[in-house]
View 1 (tube, rainbow, N blue to C red):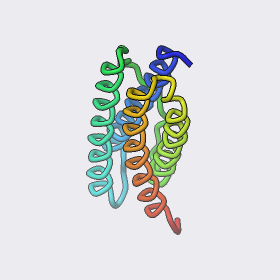
View 2: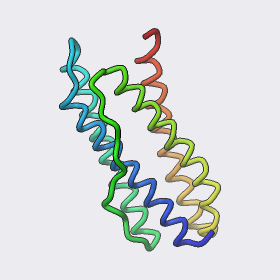
View 3: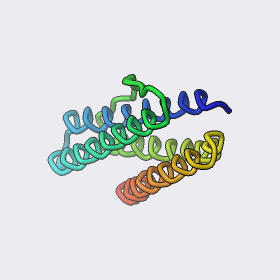
Length: 142
């Protein structure tokens, strides 16, 4: 794998981070129901967290000599809060799987940049895994 191929994959990951940010932001405004205010606050916090990921990925890509994308993948829109959180769970599990694969691909950058990318992705996995655990607990028993 070439550096450019890996940068392209990282830009795809960045597109997913933009997607997550937009998903949470959209649903923070769209959510309805009895616990709307609490869920809105939670979703806004998730969107802000994803914005941090967007910034981190952009900085990483620049640091590796690439140009970060500003494009985003599209996302499904929901009205039911349970469906919102089920989809959020699915999105976070997907990125964990992507980042595990990306760690294995990171060695194509050589020992220094490859290790840096591995450490970066491990932090991203840790955060997404915390979200997965949180969403599973929110959805338990429903």
